[in-house]
Length: 318
View (tube, rainbow, N blue to C red):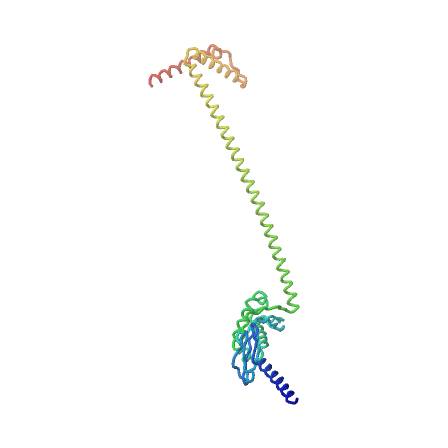
């Protein structure tokens, strides 16, 4: 009976030892993780994701490192700009373990080390720029911080993928001054826009008046052209009518009856002229032989005859 009890206890003990040994010997490594294995306190290898076997008596998993991207908050800190303005700045950095061995043996706590490095680098970078630039060049500031952290964190087996400044808090007095400045800038832009609108409106009015004057001048020009053309046509028509009348008078004067008509017309014109002189002048015209109608007619006939003789000589010469 005692033998059976001893055998049972021995079997249970062996089973327990086998289970413990199996537990230590077989390791299932999850995805995106790495196990750093030591033997007698010295690094021997790194277990990747999947099923792995260890020597259960001499090997042990010293470090269990994640290979995922990690987001780490950077605590708020005071920083002074180049123009001596004190700011409260915080941020967040995103890092990833590239070499689990360096992350285990290169630094005691790589997360704390990178966080402290981010804070000191932030203070250094902000001290190089003025207050206004901290808001305008935030992206460049983030890139500079990432570059300097990665340069220093190379031996630690980690890489900072990006750094983001979450908040920049200047003093209350600076905030008030900035608010007044922004208000003045907004009022200035509003005044500029208003003046530009008035200027454009004045230009539009001037352009409209100019176009109206141009159209009025063109209309007046067209009217004057039409009026001139009408007057020219009227003058031409009168001239043509006079020319036609003169042609008819000339044609009639070449006949005997026409000559008599011309003589009679001349006599009538002479009589009318003397009567006009008598009416308009204080001189009294005596009724002598020079004022008789017959004498006037005779004088007129003499003139006509002389004209005819001159015309006949001219025609003969031609």
